[in-house]
Image (cartoon, rainbow, N blue to C red):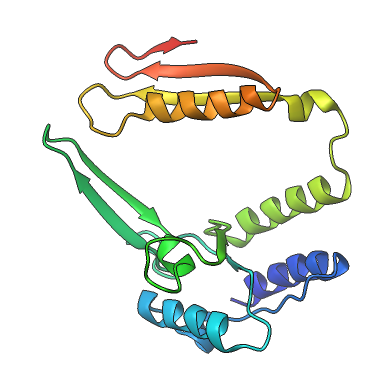
Length: 187
């Protein structure tokens, strides 16, 4: 979509102003399936004279409601207590040597329309050109989580680890947790 390419040019210009070598590639150039995109990223990482350090995917995941999106991998997790999760991840794109760990930064702006994309880019541009200089903005962290007692993944524990990390760094942390069984907010 030409309008998405125009929006990508704005991001490219921002990065080049920072001295970051930036290029734009379309799905018609690199492939449109997950396997084609992954192979293209792996090739760029291992074969280019200057390997990319980061990739930005500029569209939401493709699905039945948005077939023109960029594919991601879908994971299905089941635990012994019959809890079932499905989620998408771009981490496979970042893992160029198949060891399960990212080798390159992969980000995504999950826009489904030009208006969504332009809104995001306007916020990005403002944030980068006019950063908030109030220390309160950076020193206060909100950590949120959802208690799911019947599931093996303990989101509460993960949120508490995150809270502890920021407290060690001297940040003021506010907790906001949702008790899944009673829909009560806990803090």
